[in-house]
Image: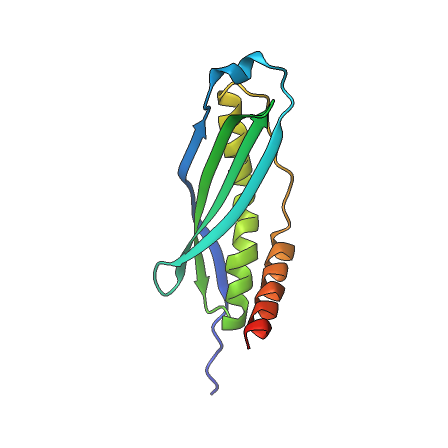
Length: 150
């Protein structure tokens, strides 16, 4: 009798805010007309916790400048613990680098919106991000870099 192949399992077991902050460098920003320039940065990091669990941390940083001066800096580290069991090795990079950040982004987006509003600024809704495309581009760039160094 042939041994049965284990079914792959992928699940989000916990989601939490690992860290968040809002910095308002100066109150003079509230006395000027609001016409901000936004600089938005995203990154993610995967850490293996045990044989089947990974912690993924999606970092979203937003820096707003108004009339040439910093208005606010908002940052959230949105984390999730994901179960990855019996996943083929060639799929793990895509899951950790694209799928998991896609799951976490709506939560990070909500936290950014909330802390910016609590800082007395107009609501900030971040546009959706295509992490699948970003991951594919990073993989292509890594291949180009590897070929350039060969």
